[in-house]
Length: 173
Image (cartoon, rainbow, N blue to C red):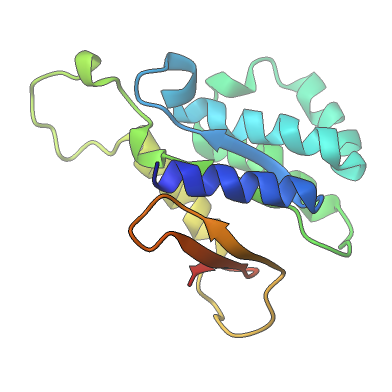
């Protein structure tokens, strides 16, 4: 119980409100859930299931791509999200993605080599940086929340939180 429990609760509440675009829960010891190259294709597939305008656009794109999950993360981000979203008209409402445990993406502890090559960025860090660069996080922290989850039970010493979702950030209180 902890951050993943909170993320799971948020996903369920977003799903109930029809606002969950997709979720990916990274897990260090599950090979299909620790590979950062699987995050964006998974989120894209989930979004296509709930948002028809995106589904129609992405279908054409995926016919041209042989194996998008083998492509570099920056190519995936452009192909699966940036380019299609640039063609979509603005819509009312919000759809929210949840990615949990990004720090668990990359090599399994048993697969890591013993050399300390600090200069090479992990795939998880590349993913984080690519998304953060495009997301414009923190541009404005005031305004109306887009969804509020009140009195969410969390197994911690405090026990319950209110969770405010804004366009650029999330606040626990």
